[in-house]
Length: 96
Image (cartoon, rainbow, N blue to C red; front, side, top):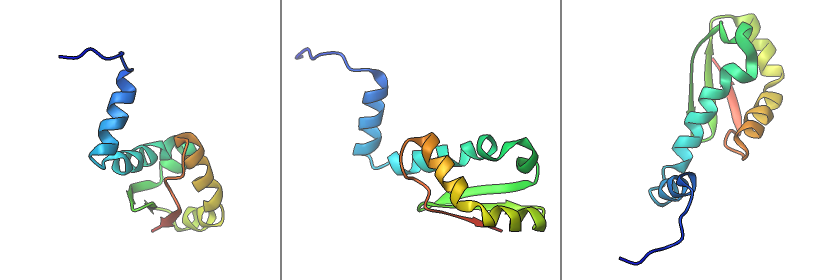
């Protein structure tokens, strides 16, 4: 067995995810998990569910008034989520 230089475990995992084409799914899961941090506990309280598919985050809310307000600022939310992820994962948010 040939010895190689040690690599950080994070690098090994990232390479594995890219090789198995799982990196997009992991990024989408991370984006979904960032929702409470981005909108705060007040807005998150009205969030029923959230899901990310092919770069679009679908957020179901229990308040129609809040839904309308968030639709006006969804570009800011997209930008904040992508900044926290460090790359463009989310392209749009659909409020239901």
